Amino acid sequence: MAKIPYKTYLTEEEMPKQWYNIRADMKEQHDPLLNPGTLQPLATEDLYPVFCEELCKQEMDSTTRYIDIPEQILDYYKTFRPSPLIRAYHLEKALGTPAKIYFKFEGNNTSGSHKLNAAAAMAYYAKEQGLKSLTTETGAGQWGTALSMACAYFGLDLTVFMVKVSFNQKPFRKAVMETYGAKIIPSPSDTTQVGRAMLANDPNTGGSLGCAISEAIELSMGDDNCRYALGSVLNQVLLHQSIIGLESKIAMEKLGEYPDVVIGCAGGGSNLGGLMSAFMQDKLTGKSNARFIAVEPASCPSMTRGKYAYDFCDTGKITPLARMYTLGSDFMPSPNHAGGLRYHGMSPILSKLYHDKYLEAISVDQNKVFDAATMFCKLEQILPAPESSHAIYGAIQEALKCKETGEAKTILFGLTGTGYFDMPAYMQYNEGKMTDYIPTDADLQRGFDGLPKVD
Image (cartoon, rainbow, N blue to C red):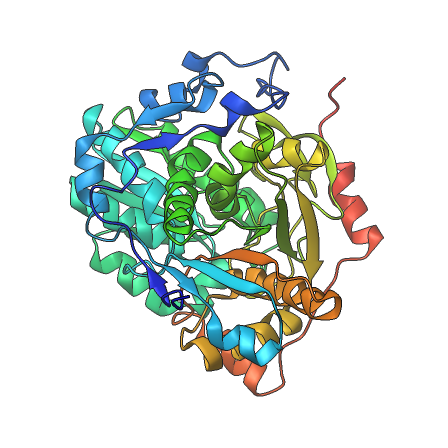
């Protein structure tokens, strides 16, 4: 039998031409978004002041299984897609496992991550609506970079509120975004009411994604020619990221393979939701019984230690309420947290699937994450992003279980991006200076105390 190639690509003819909407196959839908003032379910048009109209329709659509990808987006995708499905032969050998380990590598573009899949769609629909600009937030910088690339391609202005601790740690991310024409503001800032209130409460705060989201929305709401774009969490984002899973499934079918376990890092849910989409469809429709594992940081454990409750999606409490696993919108991750998995909540879709036992979750401290990252980069010659390295850790643990049991399972994980802009974190790890912070129950309770009261 011929050895399976290291890398498997799709041809242009094999590339998916539609996104997959996982909600169409869910047994039960997640609870609706609520108006924060009335606590009543939102209508599609209620979202129009915040997002592009077509994206609002996609956000609320729970019945259309496949949505055509516009030709202009397909043309743009061709500059960085398809991404390779790679067999991790060297990692398998080093672990001494009978498992077969595959990873879908999304780092082959300047943003270094999967984020460009959704950014392309958001910039395209904004351009089609006749808008002039977008605002957004970014944590580690991948999303801000991706949207700056897409806005440059489609001719839109962009303002990015970058979480302050990342802004200070990653000046080169800022430089790349500025190269594409974006304006970068450290968050919290004195440019918005929300930012000024945050700084008044804690002048030394390192910020959070929830805070940056609030600032970006506030800025966009003051301009009729501007809308806000979110890089994770939302249904529309998981829809656009489904291309990862669709490509992965086609590539594995070419190899005669199917995963027993699908693993992804989890912050807001975009890459895991995208990677697992086509395979979760099979589970939801009774065609397979694969396991799905979300790996999140122990310093921001929204699924493993959070509450399944209605909460604001932002720290400034101006967004609609979503039913999700959350640590509370007031939760502030520790400044020593490396990477972008700093969000207090989780995608409503993934939260519902986790709540209904279709999805598992584990948390891990960052020293163990970087142990896995350095092992992987030495063996597979790709320097992974800290976010992606959570999935690597999960894959290694599953492979070691196979070593113990002798089961030759097939493992698929998402390598969401590269770590070349994360060298300060790697330097801390290499010098033995990386610290772990795991919030106490009392720390988490302060976030839970701020949850809105919804019957």
